[in-house]
Length: 489
Image (cartoon, rainbow, N blue to C red; front, side, top):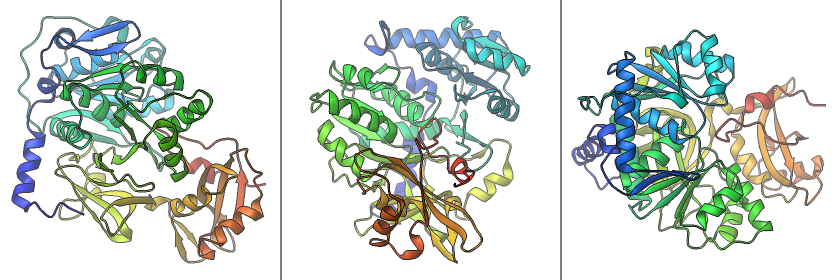
């Protein structure tokens, strides 16, 4: 699946080109045009650059030096963007924190990353104060004279992003300036992103999807973005008033389609919809195609490796497939069909965790994603699940995603997650947790029979449990550990 047309020397040169530069310098180009909007507020490129410079000066007056870490713990806002770009402009690394984290989760990240200080909005500042970390109010960002642009290389750390923690305690992935530049420049190429584009941005800024693609891509492309809290009404309003791009996760597209079913709206003028962070069910793919005027471009990424694979802009966009590698990225399958990555987007290691870093790479330098992949004859990649989610039942291996894809085709099923529950007979019992669609009753024996007509018997669920909704993290990934803690009645 690597780009065989490029010799290794040419591939290495492409990676160097994609990674080249100082991220702060590349993001803060001058310009008179409006680059960011939020509600009735807006910032031009020059205004954003000046804000970042003065915040950087203020942070340096607070003792922040190049190479230090500054945590950002706040909800999306223009102030969040100013704080983040100010941290980069000061030469420091931004520690990204999910604003939905409570005290125990916040404590783990702050203790692990050991930042010099944290920038927080009012609700989160209370939590930070209790943990004894110096806090700066987001609403009162420090100001100072613009410092000289720090001398940073593509290998200089830019941010620490913590893994989702769906299978254990989150680890801090250190992403450097070159990682982010390679991701952003790759997105510009594969999605034909230009200065004419207006992104409707409703993703969390702390996350790779909203940060590395949404914010960085906007600033690198010369285009603009509108920050909105996600609701279908907000998104549609902005798309019908000049928005040309929208990035979302499957749960967002589900809600968007539900709204459009009730409020028919012509969105055929929107240039591109992109979906990622969790699998897009084929039925939702087809529903989006009907209601949006096009199916979303499904893509694949991982915190440690950036956004690395995408369905092609010009098609075909295939449901259940995440596509081909970004420029400069190599993808291959290792043991147990694990997806392995190499490219300018891929991080160098985990924060203060050399053992985890060593275990994460193959001897020849490919990052081991933990995802199970399948490569079709046309060389498109599909993701079949996580190795750690593998169900071993009666000595056979079952990947949950394969079973979910079958059950999602049943009219009674709106959403489904498959997990293994302990079983004296099977070791693990394949169990389906189903959110009903409402269009047909969920009958356990019927769904099991439906699966048995389409899958080998050992892959079929032994139990079907009806639930109101699937437990998900902030980016829509199903938390199977919550499901496996369920005690079936």
